[in-house]
Image (cartoon, rainbow, N blue to C red; front, side, top):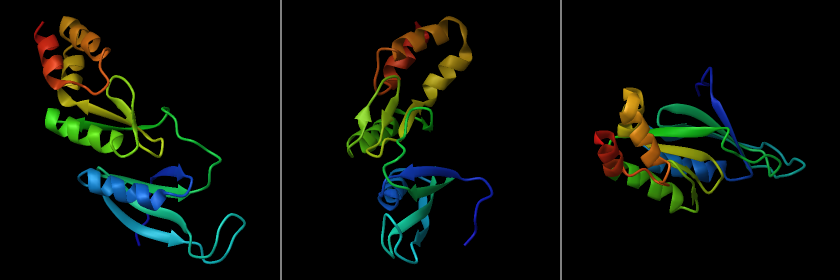
Length: 159
């Protein structure tokens, strides 16, 4: 077992292993690694319960910690996934929202565990980087969207 030097630790109530499996199935360059279980009973669980799960999401090493219901996720942390086209945007968005998640605005959504995701087509990032009126038009178009509409952003870029 190799332990990454810097790892994102995500707190789950008790579903870290299920979440890690979902991420591994949904995103390329993602996998589930070691699952560490409690060696003995403890105040809020039993021997054999999953304590932590090592996993990778789109190349980012993570640990899922089953820490109980004390802490909840919020938008202060999110994964941002850059997509190449509408098909890829739809696939990720629908996987997250369609698996008990919820839509937000401007390309943001939450999965069923409360973790925030930004599903961001590269065309949006490119428009913002272009600056000027092109960025302004794309930005204003995005403000009316939940899931980003690639064609609408491309149209807004052209004016």
